[in-house]
Image (cartoon, rainbow, N blue to C red; front, side, top):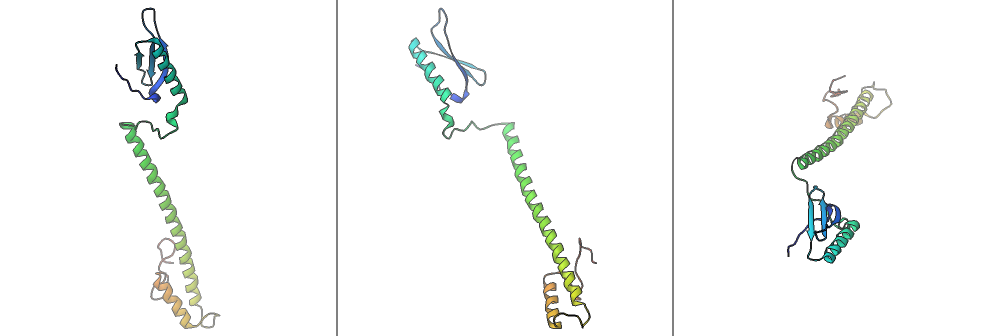
Length: 163
């Protein structure tokens, strides 16, 4: 007796073969194109084998569980790994660029607000605003956040150029 183990998902077709001088055989054609012939000492056993293998292939129960196709090897696997890494890197860069764009927009809004505050602080003494103590506190806050220089002028507007 000899044993043969084959993966059912590797079987492409199944048929019975017999001849005038030959006993019944079970021919399994694998997806690689190689035929495998199986015979037994009696035709009923071979016929039972044909029926059982055919039923197993038709039901494809291996797909219901945790069946995984054998891992890819060689160049295709390397190419797939490289493609997935590039996709992950691209997604990360997209998120980073969106964050950078958002930061740029918020910085422009902050600089615009600082310019408006500075123009409000530099109005003549009779303007309708707070006391000089409040003005100096606001100027100090703007300076602490890096939006004003010590002399009260703006640090940077529109791309790093002073206006």
